[in-house]
Structure formats: structure tokens, C-alpha cells
Length: 451
Ligand code: ACO
Image 1 (cartoon, rainbow, N blue to C red):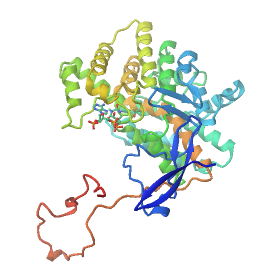
Image 2 (image 1 turned 60 degrees about the vertical axis):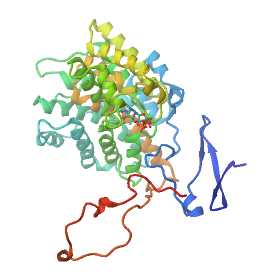
Image 3 (image 1 turned 90 degrees about the vertical axis):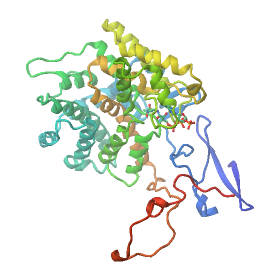
Image 4 (image 1 turned 30 degrees about the vertical axis):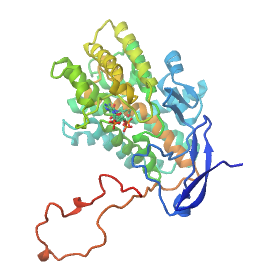
């Protein structure tokens, strides 16, 4: 029998069905709330809203658990599968057999080039263009060059589109970097694995091939695979929202890149290093940075700390912290920013402000130290996040696309603006007083509660 939750509104009782996910998460189904009660649910940043049912990633933020298709991410640290294998798992729901992996990798090799005409697009961007802007624009441009992939009705078409996107976005990312330096584009190399091939396209010269140190290749592989999916985060929710209008896979992922760019989301990996560098350069002390983050009168937040879902150590951050130490150790290098990051973390985790709010390092806190050691330039950090997150966006888009019950996402709003008023002809208008105009709405800063 379906469990029900009871809502009492204006003295009337409403029964709302409850359902439970495979890991025991409970949800009240309010799909018919407005029809039944005339009210909508209000939750501006969706903290309490399950926007879909998904079988891709399980997160338990209270206990620091993250599983991809059921597999705990700690197992990827131990077994270190290839990023392509994890991408396959995320997108198709199970680990590939050796033959499937070989076939998928072969397709990716085949699709690595971009249309010659697309290369001219890079020339039109100013040299200072942020690579995230280029990435988003170029992913969207793929829609112009491969329109046959708009209709992804059968398995073969979808598999081909997924391989194409994963492979071409890697090429686009590398070319965005090279065009910013005025360097010639380097074609992908068919014998190299995903990460080594990316590093080759980034760093090889026509006169000298870049050969990735396996230690560096493995570190990049780990960073990318740990980012592969993460439930309904801001960029993934964007991909689903755009995809819900039946926008194609490329357009939806291009929108995901834009959402990821912000410093409260994927842009935090760059912000962390900028902050650590400032501490290193003695522009601010660690205590001053923590003081600014605690100051409720500023909007500054400690980059790489805190998470909407994790109220415990982000398990990806724990793995990346260990990976930083291993990588620098194997390379025989030191990075003063790692030491500063560790000190900052220690101070924050002993500070009641952070402890009381459950603020721990998130995935972005240590990933930048690894990317620096690999030689990735700072302005490419969030692009690396996008490369890693791509399998998740593809899988989530497909899950939505394959769900016959999915409809266009269209939230409602609670209107708090002016009541009905009349249009005034231009000559009758006088200068507005500070209390007039669209900003005078009394309720924008907080919804009026019922008595
Ligand atoms: N520094 C200082 N204070 C913080 C931080 C932070 N990094 N994060 C949260 N807080 C504060 C909030 O202001 C709030 O304080 P209050 O109770 O006094 O109002 C309290 O902690 C609780 O905040 P949450 O509700 O848990 O935070 P929210 O879910 O709104 O935001 C977010 C999550 C955006 C990630 C936030 O923690 C933040 O801005 N972090 C820094 C940016 C960052 O690292 N982003 C990457 C996140 S991971 C990812 O997207 C890949």
C-alpha cells in the first residue's frame, strides 16, 4: 500500500503519496499539489526538491558517500580504471566488457578530429577569451556540424553521439588553450589513451612530441574520473532543464558548461588557487582569509569549502588530497600552495564557524594543486572540470530523454511585484522618487509569511 503524508491547509486534509529510493531516501510526491490545494511549493534554490528519479549517482552527504552506478568512488582510487571506462559506466549503466571498451575507445579515436571549418572559429575569439566561453560556444557549434545526431532514437546513434562528444570536447579544450597562445593545433594521436592524448594535444610541438609521464597521466585520469557525475548539481540540473525542452545533446551540454563556470560551482577550482597564491604572496594571511569568509556582511565565501549536499568531508576531496601528496612525492617536487592549503584546512576545521555549519573541503579544494603539478594553466582549470563532468551530463540527458514520463521543466514563481496599474504616456511621467519604480516591490527580500 502506498504510504501517504498528510497536509492540513485551511482546515482541509490532503493526502500526498510518499515514495522511497533504493537507498532509503524518502520523498513526498507533490506533483499534483497545485491542482489539489491551489498552492505551490516554495524552495528558491531547490534544496528540498527532488527534480527527478535518477539511477546514475548516489550521494549521502551526511556520511560522505558517493557511488557511481552503485560503485563507491574509493574503489576507483584503488583500481584506477581508465576515465573512458568510468565514462562508459556512467553513461550506459554498467562497466564495459573488454570488447565494448575497445569498441568505444576505437570510436573515440575515430571521432577525435573536429571539422576543418570549426578550426576557423577559434581565430575569431580574442586571445584573452576565457576558455570556458570558447568551450561552451564550440560545443554548441557541434550542433551545426553534426545535425544528423539531433535525433538520438536508437542505441547505435546515441552511442556514436556520446563517443563523438567525449572525444571532440577533449580536442576543443586543447585547441582553446593552444589558440590562446597562438600555437598550431596538434592532431590527436591514435595510440594514446584518453588523458595522454589530451596532454599531447595540449603540449606537443610540431617539432617535439610531448610524452606524458605515466604518473602525470594517472593523476589527470583520477581527477577526471572523480568528477564524472554528481547528481543534480547546478550544471547537471541545467543540462536537464535545457534538455527538457527537447533541445539536442550538444546544446544542453553547452548550457551545462556555462552553469559550471561560476565560482560557486566549478569555477571554485580556479578561485582556490588564486586565494592560495594570494596567501603565498602575503597579500592576505590565512587568518585574514578565514576572517573574510566568516564576515556575514560580505559575500566572500572560502573557495573550495562547503557544499549544498555534503555536511561531511567530500569523499572526492579526501581522495584528491591523498593524490596530491602521492603525485608531488613521485615527481620529487614540492608545492608551497599545498602546504598553505593544508594549514588553511586545519585552521578552518578547528574553527567553530566552519564546524557548526558543517563546512569541509569540497572537490575543488585540492584538485587545483594536482592540475598545477600536471602543468595545466589556471584559466583551463574549470575546462578540466567540464571534461570530467561530461559523462554525467550525457548520461543525465539520456536518462531524461528515455523517460516517457518526463515533461518540460517549468517552475512557477510567487509574484511579489506591483499590483495592476495603468500605462502612462511618456509626457505624463515625472522623475521617480527613490520609493517608486520596479525596485519598490515590498517583498523581494523575503516572502511574506501567512499569519
Ligand atoms: N565560506 C564561508 N561560509 C560559507 C561557505 C564558505 N565556503 N559555504 C557556506 N557558508 C555558510 C553560508 O553562508 C551559510 O551561513 P549562514 O548559516 O550564516 O547563513 C552556511 O555556511 C550554510 O551554507 P549552506 O546552506 O550549506 O551553503 P549553500 O548550500 O547555500 O552553498 C556552496 C553551497 C555554494 C558550495 C557554498 O558552500 C560556497 O559558496 N562554497 C564556496 C564555493 C565553492 O567551493 N564552490 C564549489 C562547490 S563544489 C562544486 O560545485 C563542484
